[in-house]
Length: 61
Image (cartoon, rainbow, N blue to C red; front, side, top):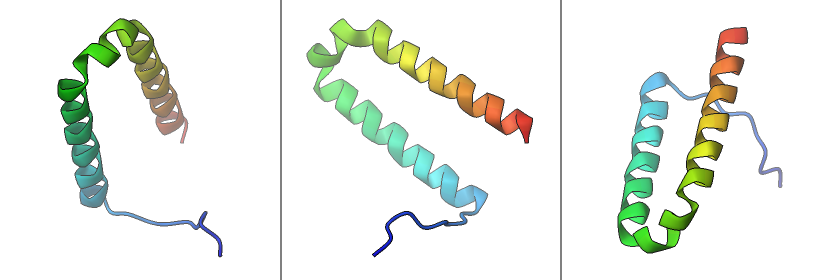
């Protein structure tokens, strides 16, 4: 059983996926605010680094 298969999604399916991840992130952040607040700078830094990586890869293609 190979769990690492290639999949092709349309733009609207990716949009739905991103919206669901955003909703989950907001819900977790609202519920466990005290847990994540001390690590806010680290979490924002990781998010910015990954966003810049995705932008770099997208523009390179």
